[in-house]
Structures are given as C-alpha cells and as structure tokens.
Image 1 (cartoon, rainbow, N blue to C red):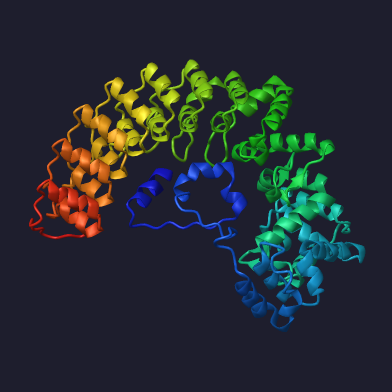
Image 2 (spheres, helix red, strand yellow):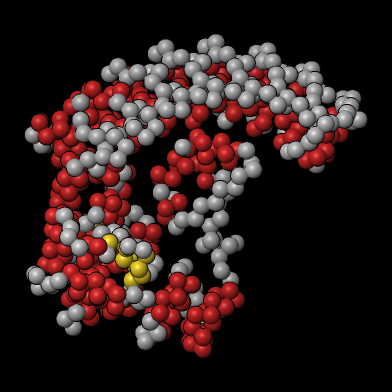
Length: 538
C-alpha cells in the first residue's frame, strides 16, 4: 500500500493531505510514512500559529460578551480554540479559572461526582476510558459476552457502584453528560474532543491504574502507559509506578497469548531499550513450553509473527529469542502484504539482524506481494551495508517488482550513489526498464540526481532510451528544470530534438514550464524551436 501511495504522489496530479497532532507526527512510526513528510505545516509554529486578532475573533464567537474577561489568557494553551468551544458548552464554570487551568477545573468537576455520591455518572466516564473512547451503546442495553461483563463489573468495583446496578443507568448517565463531556457518535459514546479524552485517561489512570492495566482495551494499554516521561508532549501519559510495572508486563504477555502480537510489539515502551530488556527477562523466565507457544503465535489480524515485529524494532536479543524458540518462522510472511522478517530488517537497515536471519536460512530472494525483494527495499532505502551483505549472499541483483522496477532503477531514482556504484560493480543491468519503459537513467534525470546520471553515462547507459510515451531522459530533465543534468546529457550527445509521442520536444516543455536557463542552453545547442506537436496534454 505504501508503494502505491508513493507512486500516486509522485505523479504530481494527486495532492495528499493528512492532519494529526504534533506528538503523532513526531512518533518514530511516522518515519515509515515518509511520503507524508514532503511538506509540513506545523500550526503551532511561529509562522502559522493563530494571531492575537484571530484568537480574539474565536473568543468572541464562542464566549460573546465574556470574551473580554480572558483577553490576557489567550496564549496560555495551544488548544485555545478548543477551550473556547468547551467553555461555551458549560458556561456555569468560572471563566478565568477555566482558561487559567482547564484540566484542574475538569478534575474538580469529576472529583465532585465521586464525593457527592454520583458514582454511576463517574463510572460512565471511567467506562469510556476503559473501552478507549469507543463505548458501544449495545454493551449497556443488550446481552454481552463474558469479557465485556467482566470489564463492567470491575469498573463498578473501582468506582464504588453497587453490584447489580442496571447498565441502563449508565446509559442514562452518559446521555446526561452529552455536550459537557460526551457525544453520541453513531453506536458509540465518545468524549466531545480527543484532548478531553487525553485528560480523562490521565485522570482515571491516576485513581484506578490497577483496574486499567488489568482490564482496559488493548490499544489503550499500548498507547497510554509509559515507564518514563520523555517530553512535555507526554503530559497526559500515565506513568506506571514501579509496583505496577510487573503487572503491566503481565498484561502485555496476556494480550500476546490472545493473538494481539502487533499491540504488544508496537507498545510505546518498546522504543526504550531498558524496557525491552526488562520485557525479555520476564518472557525468558516463563516455562519453555509457554515461550515456544508465544514465539510461534500469529497476530489475529494480519498473521504477522513476533519475529516480524522484533525485526521492525531491530532488537537483536529479541530476534535471537524468537529464532531460538521458533526457527520455522524465519520465512513466515505477513498475510496482508507478504512481508518477511528479512524484508523488514532490510527495510530498516538493521545489519546485525539481517546477518542473523541469513545465518538461520532466511530466503534471501523472498518477495512481498508487489514483487519487491529484500535487495530491492535495501536499495530503495539506501542501506549500503545491507545491500553489500545481500549481494555477498547471492541475492538476485536484477529481481524486479511487479512493475518491472529493478533494484538499480529504484536506487537511481532515490539518488543513492554508493548503492548504485555497488550494483554497477556487481554487473546489475543499467538499462533494465520498468513496465512504463523508463530506464534507470530516466529515473535519475527525472529526480535530478546529477552524480548518478554521471555514473550511468560513464557506464554507457542508453542516453536516448525513451519511455513508452516517448519521453527521453533529456525531455524529463527539461520538464523538471534540472539544468546541470540537461547540460550533462547534451554534452554526451543526447538527441536534443527527440520528441515524445504527442510531438512535444525538450525545448517545448522547458518553455512551457518556464525554465529560462534550460531554454537558453538548448537554443545555444541548436534545438529546433519550430517543431510541431500533435496534441499536448501534461
């Protein structure tokens, strides 16, 4: 799917816009979605943040005449527009206190529910947290399975709700909280805003952490608890006290045994090597039969194995443990895309992991569903050491993906000069074209990778090899405005008047795109500016 999205974006006729919170964008897992990082608009940055005038307009829209009461408080929180909206839903609150410390105000409101005996209302909010902001109405009105019953029963206990209280009471309490805390979203009850859920999760994490660790939704376990606070963006992370850490690890192992492999290894704590060591020590303390059962398990959604997940993390000790207890998974692939452990390790550039997998008979040419091999992905990402390791172990150097894109082509397209040189040294086909007829030289010219273009020309790459639509390397370099590449091609006798099938010439496209320096250079080298074209659609 990632490759398909990249291909769409590179056509430049598609604009892909994603919105997320800053901490999500800065998360390590976003690195795998590099196509989202071409242009970043940080709405909290100095250049793009709301001005004083804009904040004043927002305050007046939501707060009417009360807006002037908080004119000195506009800059206290990044989420100022949200605070205005939240206050407008609950105007009985003290406005200055709310905008000075909104979450303290909410904490006092929730504390009051408990102290004044509104245990069912308090429990209703706790259940929203327990089910990770996806509380189904039917769980409160219809027969439910034993797992849901157990969660509700234990939440009753944590919130001091009498056992036997009808679940319909909780539904009524949730309805009474609409517009202040809760909204109805189809069949689900959710908080009125994600930021408010962050606060509720943090609040209940501080007062009923034992129950949350034991019974909360597995995604909540994965995302909300941390063994350490790393930055100010973690203000609503629930820090796990030492006395609850073993219980947290036990819960992860329990999720793992139920087939939630992704949730376990994508846990936010897994980026911490000290946590990984602690986690590994625990699973090594289990009975050998249980260790083998865990190592040989599959994720219930995509059938990925613990080994695949550990290869993504790159922890050599975890990888070693997986292989030791289930070597048959070395070549097991994920259902959704055919990704193997070796492919993931090559993608991430983990040389030690790659070597361990090869030593344990990983299939070095095992391709994913789109035909990309481990060598292909290593060349795409520019992992030089991994590429050399794969070549040394007889990887198929010309193995193409389903679009006939070769490792050489993708390395040229991405400008990885060391990888290109390595492939050339090992006799990779420098003229192997994709299914559109584009050659490695064409892709390097398209992206403007001057050094790669020079290397290919020096190795006698076909300088006039055109795509199926007739576009030559010179044409695409003129189109993209890569002046130095254009000069290099012409100096090496590229056909200056070679037209695409529509009849458009290199000088035509340079004029059309407004690349004056290239036009001047083409004219100097006797380009024909009077060529006719049949039909031009670009």
